[in-house]
Amino acid sequence: MLLDVLGWAFLAAGSLVVLTGSLGLLRLPDFYARIHAAGMTDTLGAWLILSGLMFQCASVLVAIKLALVLAFLVLTSPLSSHALAKAAYLRGLAPWTGDPPPPRGEEGERAG
Image (cartoon, rainbow, N blue to C red; front, side, top):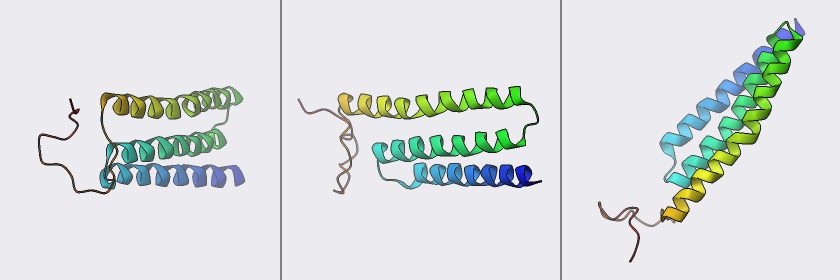
């Protein structure tokens, strides 16, 4: 009974974190802030959801497989967010500084 309650609590918390991250994707002002929101909440949400599933499973083998998936996601999600942000920066996408947005057609263009 305790494992069921704990599992559902982790699942609910993970779902709430992922929902918050999806709202961040819609509401944040620029690419870098959106990447940060997606990367952070995706990693934490996956950790919570997979932990909740580990509490719910009956087989030790399934729990080990879920732990391996969790380890893979914890390692790759932050790395992919960082690689995407670095590629955008090297391509010339400037971070938002709070200034008004440039006129249409000039966003993302390189000088020179």
